[in-house]
Image (cartoon, rainbow, N blue to C red; front, side):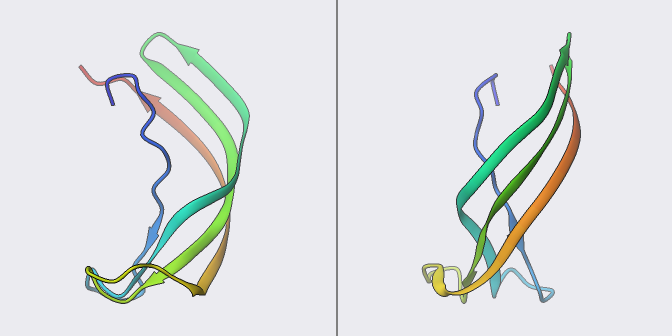
Length: 82
């Protein structure tokens, strides 16, 4: 946002509501295989690894004893909005 990276957000909702859910609290590894910038567009290809932690309710902290390992490859075309 405003040309400043916000970080990575990954969440998994196994049921139809907001809770319980799993959230990525710490990214273990991010790598970029390709980054092409052309004016207001960019293409980003890479991978991300980490662990999603269970969150029982909106007021509870993530539970590091209940995790889902995550390994994702991504290929994104981003466009700057005015």
